[in-house]
Length: 383
Ligand code: FEO
Figure (tube, rainbow, N blue to C red):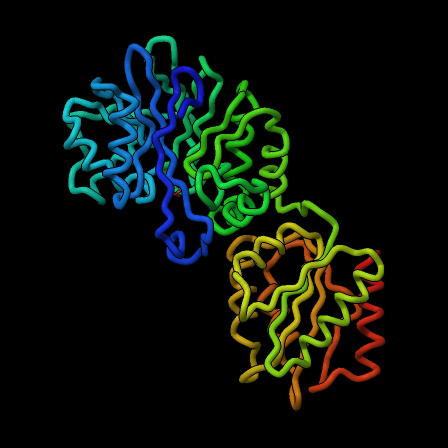
């Protein structure tokens, strides 16, 4: 597939995988993207997961039409992209591998050799001339590993962005970019907003017409929505006014309270989404906590603590620097409610959280007094 006249797509889609990185559900598969730039010199950009090496080689050979690649550019050493480096180097023994020094250290850790007889180590703003195409390397540490390097092709104005701007799903899976790009970004690099901002600043100086990420579709046309989404996520700003209600319920009473709250919000025209943390994809719920400006945490007291999926949910949020939100608590505890106290303590280091005044304590079943506080909380959340 042509990205431009000279840039070809040779990636693969993994429909076998159930959990990406061992934890994120990917019901629509996962693309491992790889590209070839055909010029006087030929460069391959990244490999693919080792399980798909044979298919990738077929794609590569089709594009090469009997030629040999001059360079393999390694932007990222996570195995979803680096898994076929060793096989590639065996198949093409004259190809030079281009990467930064941290990546070569990782090559040695993964494959037992740092390819010292065939490597070019590159750093910030170093260039590689292919003929018409000059590639400039842009370091992007912690987006998503420390060795990550992006590659800018000034001839076609293409940014090869490594993991950044990727998403879950097959390469050609036809859906909105935003939802699955958010779930991917928050899950995988949500913790590293400072580092993402640093790369966005570098990208702002480039004239970019296309973004070729290592996952998901090639982005082209008006790139503003993608850049705006990344800017918001990197700064932990909400995308929308709305309420995520994340809950657990053992016998349905906490769920009933949540449904009353959601109903009140909807009546007021306040967008809200409700997630049962014991049953949903918890990473979808985590990503929605970063989408909306308000979050309600609703759970039961359990072993003088909170119900485990809620603890996991909050720990996933705090591990990703959850901050800058208005939040409320709804707890249930038949003889000794503890959940709100525990949830507050789990969130105590999160920056700039505003706790609502109307928090709810249910002692088993929802009573009339609970209902009036639910109404008051809905009013508060709608302001
Ligand atoms: Fe797609 Fe960080 O690997």
